[in-house]
Image (cartoon, rainbow, N blue to C red; front, top):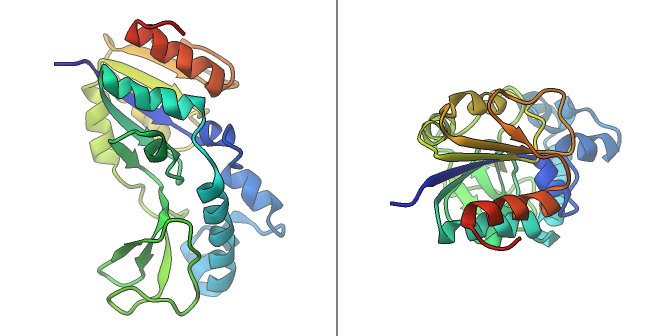
Length: 229
């Protein structure tokens, strides 16, 4: 049975495909605060504004392309049992070829109803319009975890990290909780590597390899796979 690799990815990975982080996008977008753009309160008070913001983000994400780090992570599946746990709301991991991806903060390429059924609809890069409803007749909203809402797939993510032989953390400064707490569940005997541009502190037991993910991650994957970088 192949070793299990869990990849924990954050916004720095997608930034190397040209996608701004949420805070960068929100800061540049008409100077609105995150409370206006990414909270249940903002949605209730200004749904059109929220839809416009996410329609723009969705269009940019759909135009983006997986980078060398995304492709290297997908290539790990040739030699390992791989689970990707991502804070990113784009689908660049899937488009690179990763087949087991858990999204903690939702997915831009889906919309969901606002009723109790939370019916999801795949929309890829299409916009959501005010008045557009799901099969249950409720207004569609971005299938994104907003501030004040519960992070998705955390229990499954913890279980995967706990059982991993290797853990790769890429593109995150581990400052967003509860996602950042997942590194605490890695086994002491697991091989643990963290790649980021910079870090204030590195979790105990992790090898820190600073630099762009597009340069560093393919080297890590080549080392683990026993192939030339």
